[in-house]
Figure 1 (tube, one colour):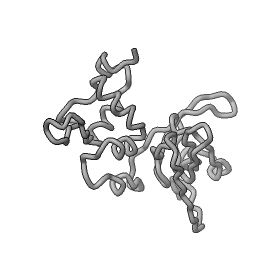
Figure 2 (spheres, helix red, strand yellow; figure 1 turned 90 degrees about the horizontal axis):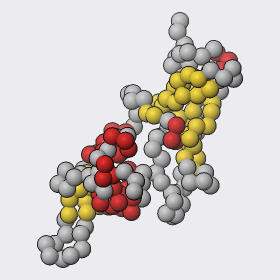
Figure 3 (cartoon, one colour; figure 1 turned 135 degrees about the horizontal axis):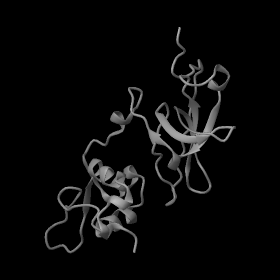
Figure 4 (cartoon, one colour; figure 1 turned 90 degrees about the vertical axis):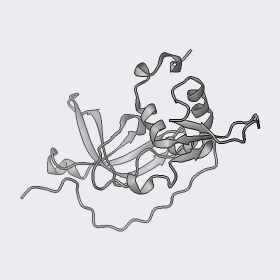
Length: 181
């Protein structure tokens, strides 16, 4: 009999999620139960890829998300299965699977105003506008101006899914006008 891919824990959990009203706060990129992968060094100094499911998360004083991850059981000895580790968000990559809740979290509208789009994308509204000025996004495809003609004040709406794909492109592969000055 093969072991399950993750250790089943028969406990009910109640979660309190408090969101501070601070500019530095960002939405988490990953969610409970999602499967992620990362590279790590074991106790013998050997680097390898590891996978697991998110069982907890915290936003630290240095304005970064850390995730508590329970290792997948497929490639580990039984004594290591119950271990969990805390990994920084920047080190993780999503492994799409049927347990992911991403489809349920998609916004109802494909086009969102600047602040809402920035929050979904996990960046600040100013960073989103800066990337537009540096031509990472194309007018009519990634963003559009919904202001009254002649008002002089743009009201940008953003196509979050398309912007997310543009942001996923490595910086070195982006158009040259988007690179740092």
